[in-house]
Length: 389
Image (cartoon, rainbow, N blue to C red; front, side):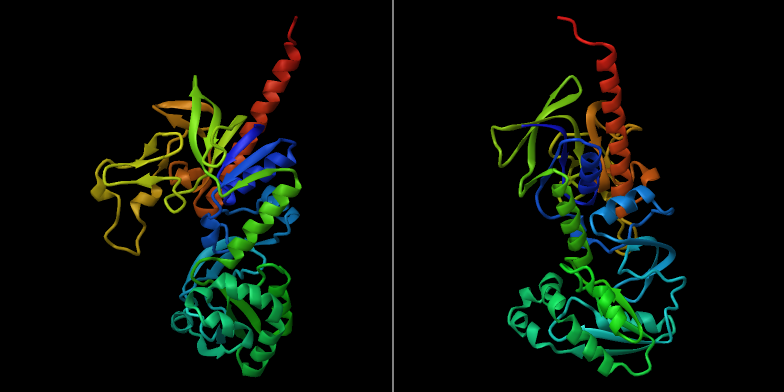
């Protein structure tokens, strides 16, 4: 099976690269295990400090609306974090003072939204808070099993009964100017958050819950759908297990499901993520990259991998695969000419691309630009040096 580019990893970085390359006329394939860091996505793109027009167009074509406003966003425990570029239904505030009084809404039996902690955090910012629970008959079946009362299961029901939620809020609302709801709306119908805001006579703010993230899964679904509409191929539930490398180039890879069928391409992108998705693997002696055996930048002394202060930045999260200035992967000290590394597997080895979702998007677009430049140069060279027979 031959492609122009094969992308290993179907998270934010992999899908961004795949969409961009398909739009440019390439024939690409994405190998995806199915779950990615998008399942933990907050809805904002950290470290993107300027409005990225290329990215916004790419996402809007997939049905994902973004907005840019420098300020702060509300965190699940009532604290605030600096943000700028976000999904349409994620509020950005100029300051942590988001109102005078807040009505915080939760749903009976839903334990992944910490409304009391959220209220405590907002009260420290000077807001008066009331917490109220809504009991919906449509959620009663989910309450029979704690494993079913998760954000995604609730979100599937909420897309059908959001009007009831609005009615309940209107009855509960007194003199509050802010209503805070868990992010369990708009999984399949992206218009629902906006409709809720139109129906409630107060500012509606959606706050994060425990994973899985409804905005993240929705983003993944829409990017994947757009990628396939553009002709891209996705090998779902599969993973790369072996690579054939010759003279500092990847010639093909083998996946677990395809077994003896090789995936050949002119270029490859590694976007397998960090430790959660096993893009990086650690043991008591080392941190390594499991598919290609690439060089990884990390401290030799294992005792320095972590910070005993749990809430502080952890050093191991900054470790990542080594690359050159053009994001070519490095193996045994030598760059691999046609293998690019993007996303969180880079850690902090390329700080100019930022962190988190910002790192995923910016590094993916940089790798795409380099691949298209190489492809154009190869085409020009072939045209100027025709084969003679």
